[in-house]
Length: 154
Image (tube, rainbow, N blue to C red; front, side, top):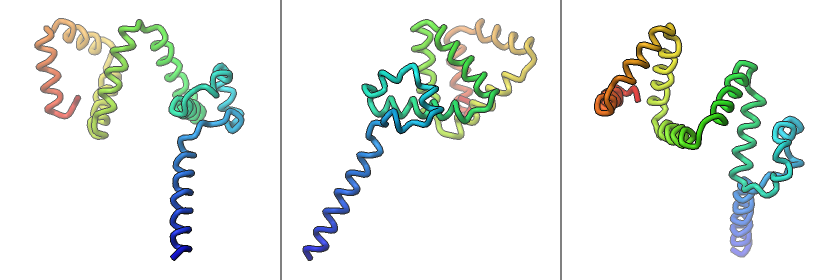
């Protein structure tokens, strides 16, 4: 009985330690050379970053390292647009991103497909659609958004 009790306590302690390891901060030296090179500009801040921030940065670094040259070009373009955006624009983009994250996988896929259809339209058709959208009143835009939502497109 004592052996089972001791074994039980040991397993619980081990589980607790392992769960804490997944949330432990990542030591700079444990990063690969490629990760260190990408994150070199924040090396001095690294120890003071909370674990969630470190994990987000590592995730981004790994995404970059595994990206194709075309994907890297797209990522750089997005970063430049983000850096050039005003605080109000950044706030709006963050809000839209959070809304997108709340969608189901099917809704996200539908949004991507719709966006890709628009992106692949000839430039003159894109401009016509943009102009038509700008001419709509806020109420008309809202009604259109609601119709798209019912169809599963937004």
